[in-house]
Image (cartoon, rainbow, N blue to C red):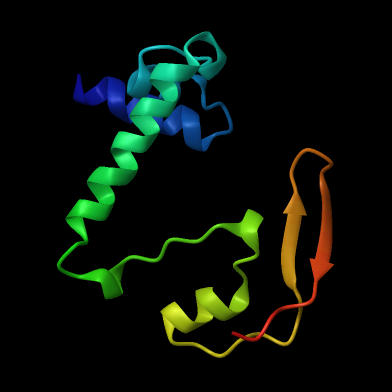
Length: 104
């Protein structure tokens, strides 16, 4: 079983996520069972949040879609905000756009 997990992780890191998804979810395509896929995703997020309950300074949750950017990321890491714009990527269009960073 351990070797299968290693093989699946290797396949996922090489570009194919289907074996990895099958190992985690039991199937390769999330569209085959979206309700289960979403439930596993939410359960994982809850488990991670619960793990970090006593150490909130160790977990950063971001939502790039809602505008989180360099400010939030760099603030969490304790580093300066870069001069270049945050590299917003629209994966469906395969384009990179730049939005002005906001000061919070």
